[in-house]
Each structure stands twice: as C-alpha cells, then as structure tokens.
Image: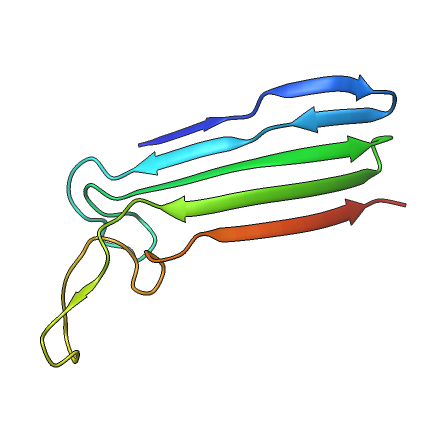
Length: 103
C-alpha cells in the first residue's frame, strides 16, 4: 500500500513556488517475489521540499528512511536468518539535495 501527497503553494514569494512531497509505503501481507516489491510489515517513508524560482530553477531537498526490522545474522555472521528490510539499508536514512535548471 502506498500513499503519496504533495501540497503546492504558488507565489509564496514573488517568482517562488513551494511543494512539500510526502510518501509512505507499507507491506500489508506477504513478501513480493521481486526484489523491489516490498515485505510484510516493512515501511518506507520520505518527506521533502522543492522550491521553484521563475519556473526555471528547482532546488530540492528530500529525506527518506525505512521502518523495517533490521537484518539478522546467525552467531558466526555468515548467514542471513531474519528481518524484513533490505540488507544494509535499515540502519540509516538518506538525504539528497538537487538543483535543476532549464535553458
């Protein structure tokens, strides 16, 4: 299940528009057969802000993270035995800043 919402405010200042994209994805039941399809009881979310100047310059900042159980390994650390999140991504968030222009 996924929920995406992006409120938009036009002309917050002269020539500046603002968007605040938000999303959450949650695995309700079962695990997907594909690697990117999601897992039961795992969630990912993101929130950001996008400022557009004169409809030509876009400044974006977005933070994303997961709410999944961390991967669990056996006592020797050689085999993955549990968890419902992607390996290596349940212990940190992700921040991205971008600039885009057109000419």
